[in-house]
Amino acid sequence: MKEFGLGKEKRILKDDEFQQIYRKGKRWHTKNFTVIASPNSQGYARLGLRAGRKVGGAIKRNQVKRLAREFFRLNQHRLVGSQDYLIIARKEASDLNYNLVFDELSRLFDS
Image (cartoon, rainbow, N blue to C red; front, side, top):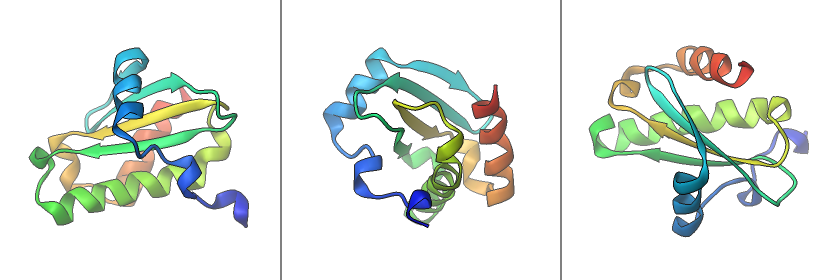
């Protein structure tokens, strides 16, 4: 079951790593999310999450990030190897449930 874990090594936590992905990554947009992907040298996919105040209060922002993190955790085996993914929640993402997040991000990552 460790293959479905999402330890610290698979998360992007440092601001300079976020800035590098912003500068060099390729962007995709959906109704509720912007996803930026950038190659890394780690050998596995990593995830970074951002949700600004426009998404809502702290509870809503954290809920959206938890849902996106859960999607990544369960689907990381389907993602292209050595990439950093930055998922940025848009204002409209505050009212999503897991099924809607899953559908939207699945369409994005499957294409």
